[in-house]
Structures are given as C-alpha cells and as structure tokens.
Image (cartoon, rainbow, N blue to C red; front, side, top):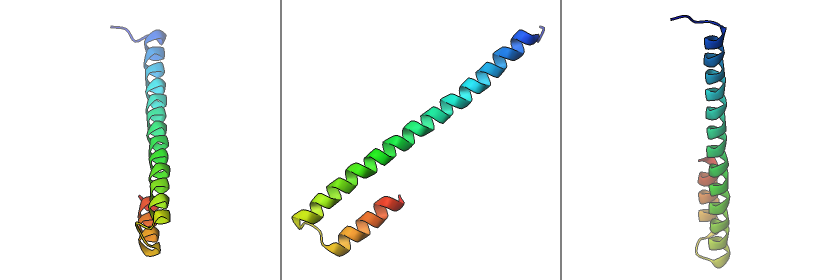
Length: 68
C-alpha cells in the first residue's frame, strides 16, 4: 500500500476536522452550563424575593452555584 500525497492529505484533514469537532462540542457544553447557571440564579433570586430563603442562605447558594 502506498502512502502518497493524497493519503497524507486525507489524514491531515481528518485530524484537523477532529480537532475542530472536539472544540465545537466543548464550546456547546460550556454554553449550556452557563445558561443553566443563569436559570438557576433566576430561581434563587425568586426564592429570596418571595421569602422562602433568607439572606445568608441566598449568599451561600449563590456562592456555591457560581463556583460550580
């Protein structure tokens, strides 16, 4: 089997394509995580505003959420 310029090009395209696929998937995961944190923070603010939790609980939950 011969490894000519065409075969090297196929491998190069495969490796570069794989790199960009992994990069894209990691970015999608980060975006989803940020969106989830924003939604959870909104819920936390509503609970605090309605009196379900006090200031100390709000601060603790918020700190834990933002550090996760």
